[in-house]
Length: 62
Image (tube, rainbow, N blue to C red; front, top):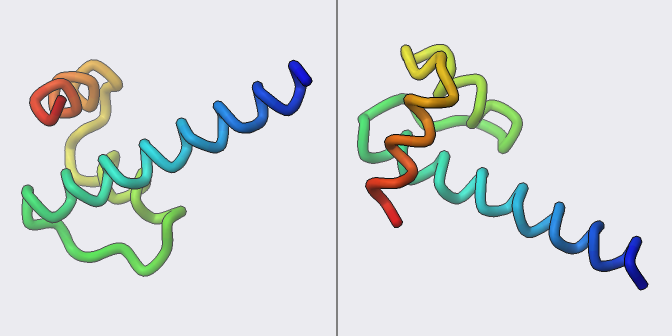
């Protein structure tokens, strides 16, 4: 039961990162990623190198 819950919460967290990453990419005018894997790479490549920068942008969407 605990393993299943942890797995589900991790799955939901990953989906949230992908969704928020897509919003950030669209709003900042970055190129559209071809896959979900490219979302994080594109954000990092486009000068959001620190997790603090990413956190600050995410907090603006909450």
